[in-house]
Length: 195
Image 1 (cartoon, one colour):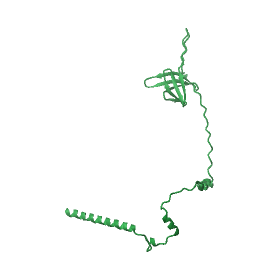
Image 2 (cartoon, one colour; image 1 turned 30 degrees about the vertical axis):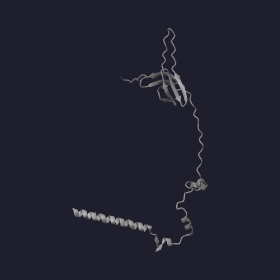
Image 3 (cartoon, rainbow, N blue to C red; image 1 turned 90 degrees about the vertical axis):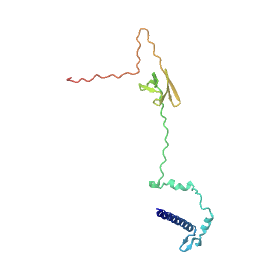
Image 4 (tube, rainbow, N blue to C red; image 1 turned 60 degrees about the horizontal axis):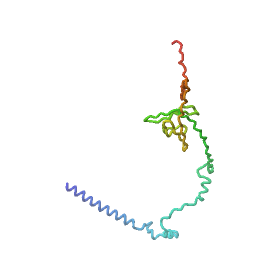
C-alpha cells in the first residue's frame, strides 16, 4: 500500500514541476518580440502614419456621424421596391362620441348583510336592471347604495337617484299596483290531434 502511495506522491510532484515549467515557458515566449520570416518585429520598417498612431492613445472614442449624412438612406430606403420613401400616415382626427344623457329611474333598493343592490329602470330601453355596488351600466358605475338613494358616477360626473314616493290612493278606491316588470304573454300549448 505504501508503494502505491509513494508512486502517486512522486507523480504529483512531477506534474507540479511540469506545470510550473510550462507556465514559465509561456510567459517567456509572450514577452519575446515576434519574429516574422527570421526578422524581429522591431526591425521592420515603420510606416509614416504608424509613428503618429503609436503616440496617440490606443482607444479612440466613438463619434457618431451627423444625421444629415444619412439623408440618402431616409429619402431613398434601401429595402423598399423602387427605393421610394413610405407614405406619411394620415392624421387621425379624434371623433367625439356623443354622450347619451342618463335616463334612469330608481325602482327599489335591496340591502342585505352581504350586498347592497339597486333596482333601476333604464328609461331608454325600458330594461329593469339589478346593479350591486361597484357594477356598471353604459359606462355609469353604481358607487353607493343607501336605503332611499343610489349614487351613480361616470368619470367626475356624479348623479344621485332617489326613490319616488308612491302616490297615496284616494279614499274609497283600491290602490293601483305599480309593477316595474311586465311578464311576457305566454301562448297556450299547441293542440296535438289524436291525444
